[in-house]
Length: 117
Image (cartoon, rainbow, N blue to C red; front, top):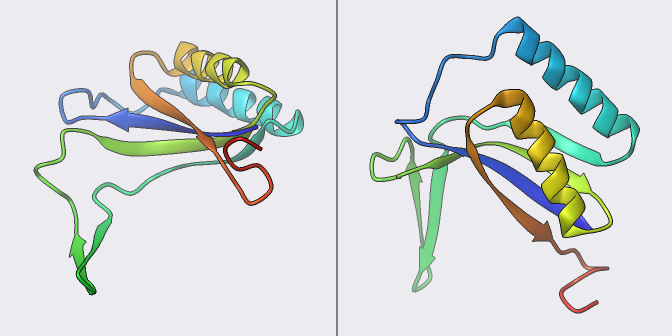
């Protein structure tokens, strides 16, 4: 099972960048998860981004940042595990390293493993 794990942030939650110790712990965690075949991809995301909307055959493109957004996705990890519970445990380990924060975990479905497959 694959899961997209997204870290969210709001303007009120933004703190200082991680210190060297935290960066080293996160590097070791990422290396461990990659070596185990759990971590498929990870990265931070640009602030703002681009919003695309389609309605009535017309496509509208708007560049961010978006002042009305309450929170944004600031990072992600794509993991492959046996169960949702394992994905939750990976996320718990992440937050034990980085400290306070919030995120979302969603199962990723592909052509070979759609819902109900």
